[in-house]
Length: 77
Image (cartoon, rainbow, N blue to C red; front, side, top):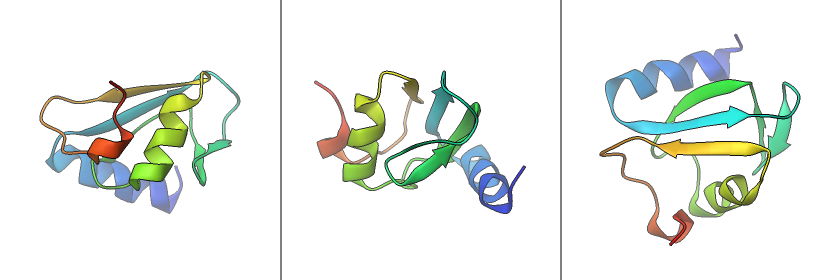
C-alpha cells in the first residue's frame, strides 16, 4: 500500500467517505488519481470536478457512504 493510500484510508476510518472500486487494472487513472482495486477516501479528498469525472467513468464504481459530505456539483441526480 502506498503512503497516499494509507493516509486516505486512515482518514476515511474517522468519518463517512467515498469508496471507489475499480473494475479496470490496478492504477487505472481518472480524475487525476490512480485508483487501486478498492479504496475508501475522506469525503473531501476529491474536488467536485475530480469526483464528477470519477463518477462518470463506467469502469469505476463510486459508493458515497451515509453521512458523507461531498461537493453537490459532483453528485448525480
